[in-house]
Amino acid sequence: MKLKTLFFAGISAVSALMSVSCGDKEELSPTAINFDRSEATMNVGDNLVIEAVVLPPDSFSGQLAWESSDETVASVKDGLVTAIAQGEAVISAHAGDISAQCAVTVQEQKEEITIVLDRNEITLSVGGTATIQAIVLPEEYAAQIEWASSDDGVVSVDGSGIVTALAEGEADITASIGDVEAACHVTTVPVPVERVILDVASLEMNVGDKHVITATVEPDNATYRTVSWTSSDEAVATVDENGEVTAAGFGNAVITATADGVSAECEVEVIDPNALRIGNYYYSDGTWSLELDSSKEVIGVVFWVGDPSADDASLKRDHPECVNGLAVAIGGEEWGAWQSSSPWPYSETVADWIEENVVDYETIATGNGLEDNLNKIVGYNNTKAIEAYNAGHGDLYAVTAVKKIVKYRETVPAPEKSSGWYLPSPKELSLLGFGEFEGNIMDIGGGSSMIDTINAVLGTIEGAQTISNGMFWSSSEYSENGNAFYTSLPGGKPDASMSNSSVAPNVRPIIAF
Image 1 (cartoon, rainbow, N blue to C red):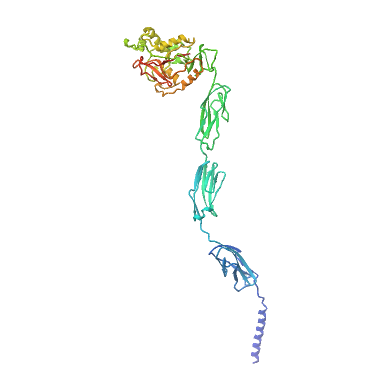
Image 2 (tube, rainbow, N blue to C red):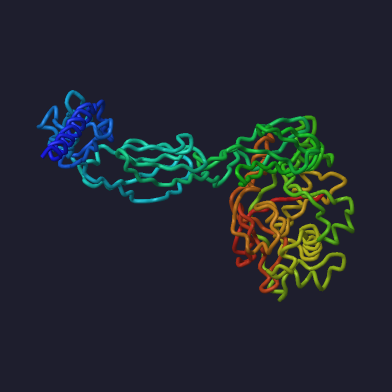
């Protein structure tokens, strides 16, 4: 009994010691609560779990107390936050006196917005415009669209999507609503020059003269409108950057204006006042001048410059000095039949008789082809041959057109170094009416440029007779039927379909010098 009592007494003592030891252990208290976030943004209806950790570890074994500052905005249970309505609320968790907070913003549920443009790329000429159409879904967001250009110096865009090309280059046009956007790539190219127009096509200048040529570039919105100027021969004419031409020396040059690779030309002739030119006054002493010399007697106006004896062997033989050109008389225009009476009683034409009886001069007959005398300056030969015919036939069958020429010679003596006045050939009448024509004069379509030029000069001469509009006899017969060729002026196309005796065209003397 005594031993048993001691055993239990020992156990009781140990228990007592143990109880004292356990009671001495210090209990830990929480010092902080950490959230995994301090703020959050949610859409209405969304859920969010806030993770909370109590520090120090094992200092709190109970349940945290959660609360929301506004249950109508966001509710919370055991860290699970539910967004209820748009607004703001603070979510808190408590462990005794320790707490933590998370600021929650609740927004309305965002709809998904899409933007689609009607084109992804555009090429515009500088100055051109285009409209980009944007399709926005949902449609109610369309009014919120914003337009922008990546380079406002190249392309601009207004609030309606109208794009304007300002300069050559590339840029992106963006349509956006918030973070949603769509883009169109725009390439701008220069507006090409279509043509350059000069205010004059030709210039006639004296040495030292100056003239400004005006160049117009089309279209008006061409990108590269700067005009550069060049001269084909600066010894004749120079040109500066403003198109001012300076005549430097006698001759011809071409002034060219170029913009964006497109050119226009002006032909410049720098004349020698003493040189022979169409429209020169021709005087009784065999000289000529560009300006009227009132001290001299004017007897003609130059209408062709060249060697008239090149075609006319008779002229070259009789007057080898006549290599300068042709002049038309200032008067002497008369009308009448080519021949006073038909030669048919003799069963021959004028040309027939000349071929049989005249040795010094060639026939006056010709065909109407390019290879025929129709296209040659042979009026002198023909007139001299017809004079021989007239001398052999008397007044009854004489070619009255040539008789009128002879009569004019008596009234207006010709210079010593000239052919004397004669009846022109069809080619010479063509030169008088139309000017130079390289093909068959039968193909001339008409025109009065030369007549206009000559008549303008004749109009400056007191007492001169301008060349009338009408038909003019030539000195050639048509080899097919013997009819005389005539030419209608203005123009220069001959005709030979009229009878020698039934028509009455005009006669106008000319001279080779």
